Length: 441
Image (cartoon, rainbow, N blue to C red; front, top):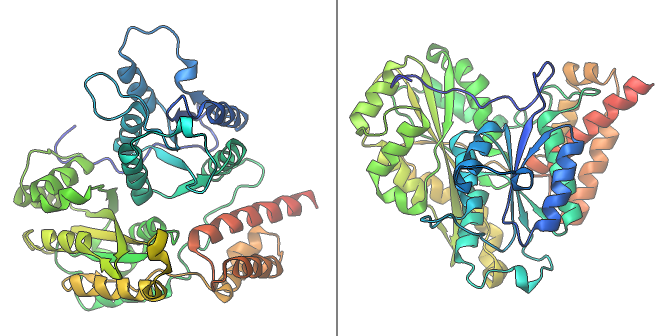
């Protein structure tokens, strides 16, 4: 591979006309999750996928870690399960098999589906590590970079895996097209991006965009919408847009050389390079490269911790400025609410507003989009009236079902509107159900 050749997409997870069944790698510590693994493996097989896990291993001359990582690479989907044990590590490694398999799946840009045991779930003490440092660090990294599903029992886990595979791979009888309202209701964010483009705030390369909001608001979907539609609409001269996720630990944000190497590796460029060379190579590609940086912003003693956002903005201020726009870092800042006793402090109610204001202050040289917040019911009702949605349903009316979904959520949660991820899952089920009923009629 040449230094300027870029990988632009993950391998397809499914779809008609595949030459073989999708392969799914099941990863977890073994001793504490044996029953859960059995149920997940059964669900994966029933979903029509080929299971790859240590239970299927026979004699092999390779070291176990080499076999595991090779199998991760051969699969389209990675299912990771973590409770309260970190798991064993191969000789010479501080990271467990489970941790190394997860990192390999991320490095190879597989479809990653993660499931964590809920902190409130009952769990045998024999299956809990005496020292919780390693397993909690792994859980934090995964929750920072991915949407993680929680489970309390093996049955609930199996059901979650089934739903996740169903959403990812679809079904032949009632496929759901690109109709879900992940982004049509995000008018405030779209208008701010358009205004920035008109005002030439996105004219120089690199230009930084800060996307922020609570977890569960589908940050990644809005970033994909920017990549696929918004940037071409507002910056037509950019041409094709490629997007790469760059995962960084908090300690690495104080190491510009490490950030540079991570960006280069994510874009399949020579990792031994400096900022000027990296910027030149990305500029020479002739297309726009989006670099998405997922970070966590938490409240600590009533103050939002926005240092990660600040460090990334300042890092890109060291890059050479060029025209036209060819490098667009997108900092995806997810709010993390305080836990334990801190959750009961009075300032928690205004936490989101404090975080949003703090992000704006540190990102003075960046385009800070409005906060991603809950979706209002009327926005989804408007979406349900779109011609494509009505056509997909054969003229059916979704409004009564949508109102029931919102009423139930608002009654049980006490909040107004619904988080985007939860709404999307409910609407996926609703669309499939309605489409199936239409076909049967």
